Image 1 (cartoon, one colour):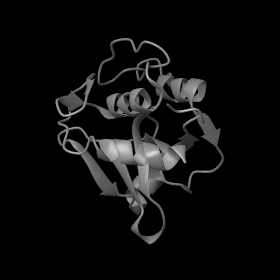
Image 2: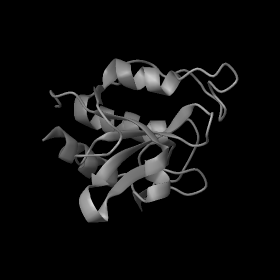
Image 3: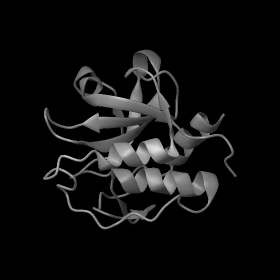
Image 4: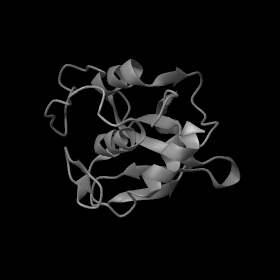
Length: 147
């Protein structure tokens, strides 16, 4: 299943340092870069070029650019609770802010976790605790047809 494969690939990025706007396994990535890297490993080329972005990207205009990009290339799922390994989670990091953090579900159930590139850290697998769950605004899955 593609979701399980995506989670395995994302785990291969664990330990990659956090580096804004990058997407190179072992050298540096941010949360979008992690998703882009997993996409490349699943499908080959990325689906569209990513423009340069700042840490506050899309906030001044309050545009949900990350959400819109996810809808263009991933399959939106109903609800906010993760149900399967490999789902892509979109988080709103603060009330009233735009959604701008991504992660992939590593495990579901009692030991639920997600894999993400976290500013000030690296790519890590974190427990999907109640504070993180409250921040989920959307879920997606990768389309079928991976290489």
